[in-house]
Image (cartoon, rainbow, N blue to C red; front, side):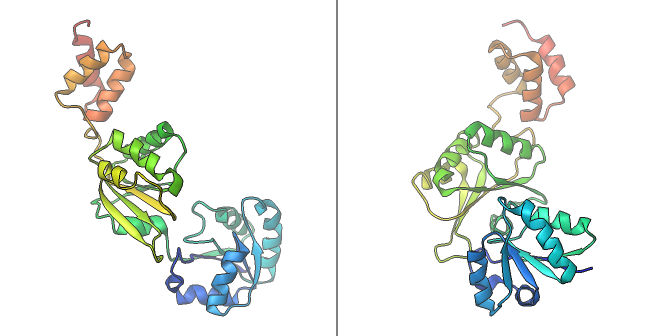
Length: 274
């Protein structure tokens, strides 16, 4: 059986391509990639003349039989346009097909924009959640981040430059003092990293920006994010006065203040009617 090499490629600076990756790109029988125009420039940079075949969301189903046929004759490689394959690109489909056919699949580690951003964020966390590209709506973005926060992990995400201002405004409205990092155009000529509270970053990036953006949010300890001033009993009373159902109110207080649900429910039952 042959080997399918999964090659991490530079996210901007071509000097970040590892010598091992360059060797594989030169020696593989064929390189499958998202965009042949992008990968051809990389092959030219390392002096490779390897045959290129596109493999993307539009043609993956048709390309898999061809890739397996190529694998039956020798080693192949897959490279994303930028960064580590298999994350936010169709590479996983090729990996799954190659494994199912009994071929070896070997990763060639290298650049990854989200990991690069986290490495300079200065967050104290032993775990992170990578959300990939954020949804478009503000409510969906907040919901995705809140779900990640349940793990008390740093949150990483990609965002389009045209939507960065709106996303930061939505996040700052929810967590104004939360530490965050905006990393733009990593490893490229106009690289920029800005760290600070979300409220400050929302003001800094209120206008339009260019380039690829990684957003990193510091982890929030469960029960401590954006809790209103005062005792949790006060918040429970406020929710009851607002007509919130017992189930929803108890769940909200338990999540925001770290209170056990049984304790919060007992307190709810003891409250005086509004």
